[in-house]
Length: 404
Image 1 (tube, one colour):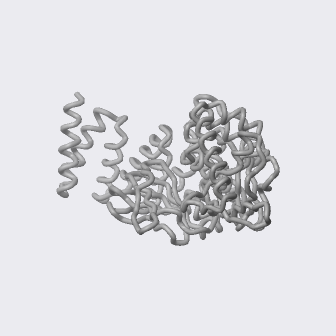
Image 2 (cartoon, helix red, strand yellow):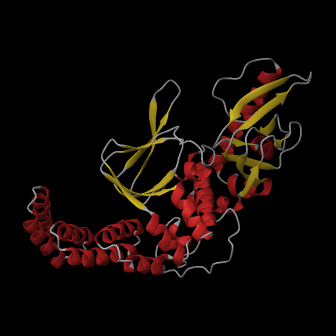
Image 3 (cartoon, helix red, strand yellow):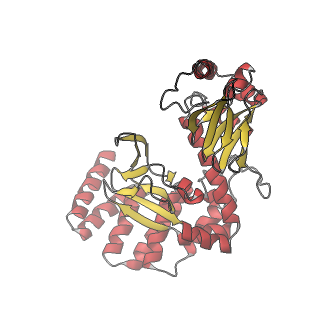
């Protein structure tokens, strides 16, 4: 049976590619009749009906497929089909309202770094999967966001965003894959990550109004949903809750990126990472504020999420030596927390900064319980002590060392 269905699907795809739409529709129809749960084939039927000018039938099929995708947790696919439905029938808002009823306020909120405006009861165990960003919106705001989203297509090799450019939009991948590429010193480029269907990117530059930290390039035909800064501003005017939901989403993503990429914290298990997430406290500080004082014991470990920090070591004779600048994702303060020693340098916010602070007790409870993390911290602390000794003896720091 499965082999027969595969033959029909292969034949249908060949007919579709060669422009024989009626014949392709017949073949996909056979597949759908035998396997109605095959949503990909049902979506192809809807697309063929659309191309053949059978608009009413296409809308009905798209609607049924959109709701089926949503109930299975593929909300972005469902939203993309809503955009297609509205292109065919601009007055057809029923599917968007149904999606809103399915997802808005139905799901448990993600761990937050700032208090929510009102408590939300935990979702039942059989609830729909949580979808980042959308699941924290109320129904009216959910529909408004859906109306603003634009569907974009990119061919293989196309640059979706470019490192260094001012960010003005965020994206959610509906289908396809992309590579995240960063520019290295010397002009070389390196792939640092790949992303696929259901993943988000671009919110960092959008919400912080900073430059793109990396380029994103489509590796295959890719469809994405885009939300621009201008659209966000319009949404916030009508639905002020959107700002807080976006800010919460942004903060959670920053923390997730740091926990995943920092060599000290990436050794944590998923359970430990989740526990540590709840213990971090978010702080924003103005430029010039002192965060760590040389000679005084540190009481917390810091992760720099946004901004830049200046690090200065003062010699006994009053001279000062500058450490390399701390940037996004850098960790500092762990030497004092781990060994109970005074800080070997002072740290100042060189620009307005967003940081995560983990108190000493939380470090001991969530971080040091992992043997790999304790060993890594010990090695790093030893390196810091050696570096301080080099400073005192007048030796220069090695280029690229950005840790404190």
